[in-house]
Image (cartoon, rainbow, N blue to C red; front, side):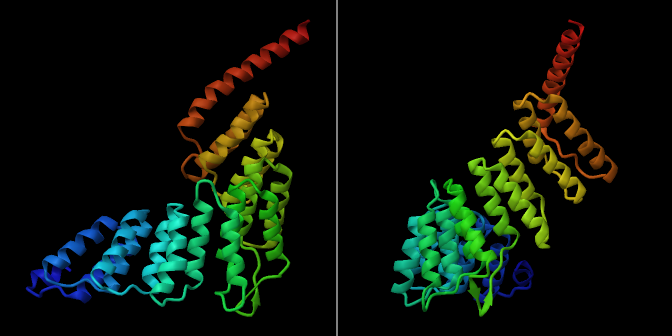
Length: 336
């Protein structure tokens, strides 16, 4: 863009669109809006592509209000939106949990423009219901069933994972797990092939169990995931540890932490602190310290960042003090 200007070549719609697309990929919404202003100053009229790229940049930057403002501006300037435009706008609403606005775009604005929603449109609207405060699992499920209906856009893993997440955030863990089971049973097809749970599906279901403090169910799902052959990450283990901590199952939390090490997954401070707090609440400071020390040794030996943060550093002196008090009390009791 700058090269063309320095060469005396006036920027045109193609140049601006290319620059705007780069902003969209990086979520640089401020730069995208500045470019929109530069277009007007250069006498270049924004088109559907440039507006869509600017809306996409706002979507990635979490700026749903600005995204909708740009969409309204398109109408004012008689620039026709397309499917990509609406999907970016619904996606922006999804990030902000603005389910009513997302649904208005899906069910009113798109039909008014003669545009048929696709699976991306529906998935973004499902995510809007999942991210709403409070979460709206029934709304998300209705969208999923509409996709499954005749003539709808076939649902994919993203669709089911969004609904599982919505149920979890609403505290309805049993329905979240039931939807996972539906996927696992091969009851759902996409493009003629049966869908099956992926890592995100299991993580969302385990997270649902964690929200409800269902440690046993979370542990069972984690074991099922481990046996599935799917690629693993730290996140489902963190969620299972959170479930154990919430249920007061400190031994399960510690054992899950050991699994992370045995699988050579990267620990993080969040998981570490969950285990430390679970042990602390259970009155097991020594167990907390025993769980922490191997993690510190492993990270030092591997030359990676320590799985500890400021909270960890605050917890350690507290745990040492409690462990010392417990040891002293045990000595007194033995002497008596």
